[in-house]
Image (cartoon, rainbow over all chains, first blue to last red; front, side):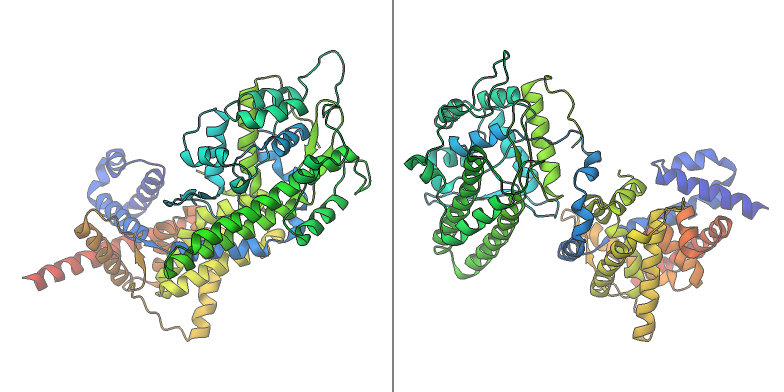
Length: 364
Length: 187
């Protein structure tokens, strides 16, 4: 009988300990059983503590996760919007913002497709003139937060902004409506060179009538500036961009039937990314040539990894759905699952910044 | 703390991010459970990866019948270990030489004692019955609840309570013997 009593007390105590109680708490609850109970609880604690020292290598953990993610059936992730229910805030992007990004020379950091949590952003700094940013997920949000707070805490970002096209990388920011787009852009006033052209593109919201998403003065003619903005590094990139555009289209319209406005915006987004990728490669090449053999090898591996991620981002962009019609402006960006938390965070910030005018996102 | 059941449902629905969170939450526990049964860190790492792969593949068919998801996962782990032992002829090597200890860096002595403790634990576990050993692995290494342990072992909860009691008593006895023995050696 006593055995049973001790067993029950033991079970209950272990349960409580698992929920955060101390051994002393448990003994206090069974004062008549302390002599039997205490050594057992201490042994249990010691075993658990000893076991906790056994951990797999980080490498093994990551490898395992990578294997699972590689095998994850694509068809399962096809129900994209359905599986976003767990996000705090919905994702909606204004084409207007993309136009601003594309035309405004705005430098920020792109999301990584790396599925391993815990990676850190680290700038590969040298005494040389170029700064190469290796981007990861968690610190992207941080980097953008710096920018969005108009407070550049990272000198690397500052360097990047001043440097111009060669080291720029692209991000797409999610906001709910043109109002917010406008307000978000105003908060970026520390990028003066980027804001002016953007102002030209995004007309301040006119409450009287529905304004076009892009201001009419953005001419559709193939001016030399336009051509420059749409230039891609090589023919492979050009083919990729053309292919992407042939697959893009707003909901309700057949793929590839973009208006010239839509095509204009999209071509620039793609070109931007390709140019940034090329610049990244070039900078990496130059940087690597100055490293010793071991460091150089490691660096090259990192670069290759980042480039693979970038490729995946580009592939994802092939599935744009672009809808430029009145306000609110929607454009749907098909994202790999891993991007979603980042964009949720970005959207959250943009919404916070722009105030409560947003209202709730409609279902897609 | 993440809700394992909720994550599992989302993962079954196709949410890859949810599965990766499950992976992060459960990986170490599965690893430990397997490690003390196969003895080699490298094998344990391989098998742990296989467990998650197998779970991912079987997830679409998994039915949430009110049973804990962790129990299902550890059942997979259990079966995998059994299969491995069958393949390898079952010589159980319980040395932890290859396991990577968590080195805090600050107190080397404490770390050494910690590692030593695991060896002691495993030595003491040799004296338990198979079932008692399994309970110890499930409850104190895999951190499974009573109900989950009962699921994994295919026994009822009362049986697990009794086994857990007996196991801890035996472990205590063994560890005391070992400690006394060590003290004698040191003199």
